[in-house]
Image 1 (cartoon, rainbow, N blue to C red):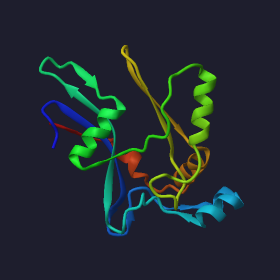
Image 2 (image 1 turned 90 degrees about the vertical axis):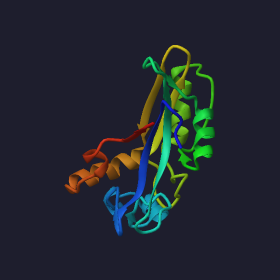
Image 3 (image 1 turned 45 degrees about the vertical axis):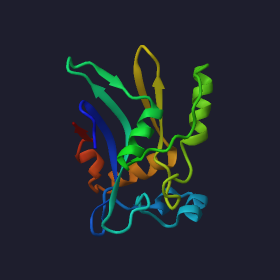
Image 4 (image 1 turned 90 degrees about the horizontal axis):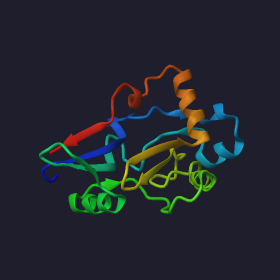
Length: 174
């Protein structure tokens, strides 16, 4: 489904196989946050809406490389169009704006970094990605939400292998 020279970058979510999640289950009681436990239950299962044994992908970036090796980043709108054409999902877009100040950017990120996940509201959101699209340079920043960082730390403290850290991000080129 890729056009010649296209590269797609995506995250795999859901299950590795049968009952084994890609991201390990977390004990929410360890957060000590009663409201968090009330909202998300005693355990977090990062299913991203996938049924047992199923997985899915969410595209977050696409590029086109020409015959001379020059790489062009696809803007968000083109990523969404290509995903629709290829019948694959893309990460949700939370906000679009023109950068004014660092403080404004941080306030916008704070509005979205925590809370229920938009794909599967039964678990906490991982955080947000800020894509800066301009003519000079394509830049991406990731801000993980506080609650996700707590759970991720708990995962590491329990010495359970996090498959995201064991394997690099999937990349497919045509």
